[in-house]
Image 1 (cartoon, one colour):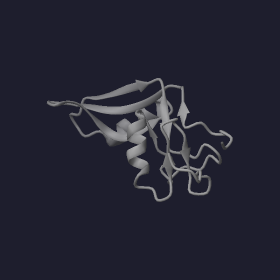
Image 2: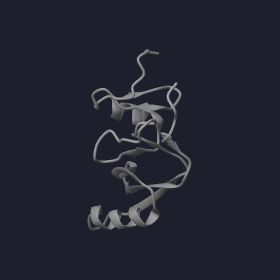
Image 3: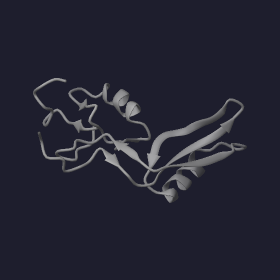
Image 4: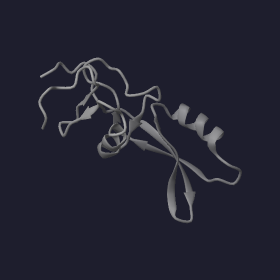
Length: 115
């Protein structure tokens, strides 16, 4: 097993921008922010006049980065509030692998054996 240098699961507050609609809360941005200040800043940029915007807090985030080298799957440096969302995202990234053990591997560090 490869050394885990960069965990994919980060237990720290992360924030999501949501807006209230007649269907309930919907994401204003798919991105999770690592600070409330960043979320507030982006909410002011993304909101439309009349939007009721809320900042949701999550106690854990899942990073789309290789646990061996720390490389993110793309320049967006995406983080997710749900492990399944991360997996769905990584299916669009050629060569990337995510496991049921909550590990993420880039094409250079992907284990040879399949689950």
